[in-house]
Image (cartoon, rainbow, N blue to C red; front, top):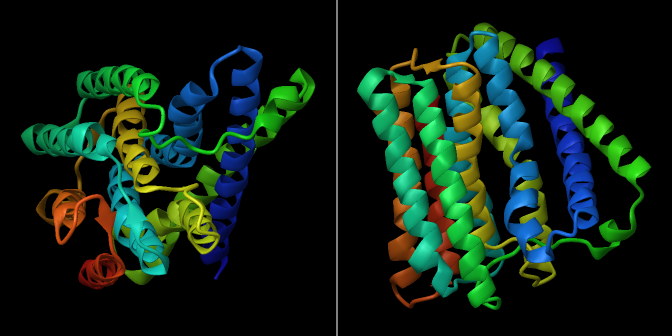
Length: 315
């Protein structure tokens, strides 16, 4: 029971820390006169990936590489199967041209690259992490240029204008609270997850790809459900795909630069990563059939039920 409380407490601190970090990052960006569009496409995306980043770094440093890798793989699966599935069930999702031209192809490229890197040496090496980060920077440059040309076509996170008037003192207080919450949250979560795995007699990778992944996807899920009920486009397919790209490139990229990540659990390459590739790939036919530019309710049901089946197979 104590270990479950560690996990839940860690997740709560990660959600809190992520929220404060987003606020501080947006406030600081306004102070530096960065445009709202660029803040939405870069700063907010980096900040919302911070919980996954801290968990992966903490896990890698504390010799739990399966948690470091499956935290990202599981989060990417949950974003599409769980978050996108439930959001589409509540109401059909509209897709724009940027999905076909840029974000989906880039997601598939990064997903295949990470599979290739892990498969070739059973290790995510430091130089491979650098390649992932350089790839992310290139993607962001292209995305920002595309957004400037087609402002109506690019999915941009809602950026609160009120953050423009926040004082430096408040920004640095938010940064301190966010940083502390993320640090202690990742400590509690990794330690608790390792203990839960031992007690249940399952691997750390299994706990990471289920419990931790669902936990770190809770903010996206909550925001998506609220947005769907209000019929707002606050969280869209573009934002979820952006989150998955950031998870692979920034979280695994930065973690492997700090400490190389070995693949110690065979099911990561034999099973888990193929689920991630499958969920990423299926989005394209779903947005083309039966009609283009839409993900319907019944497709949301298929995604959600497939995610439930995935959780079943993992255990």
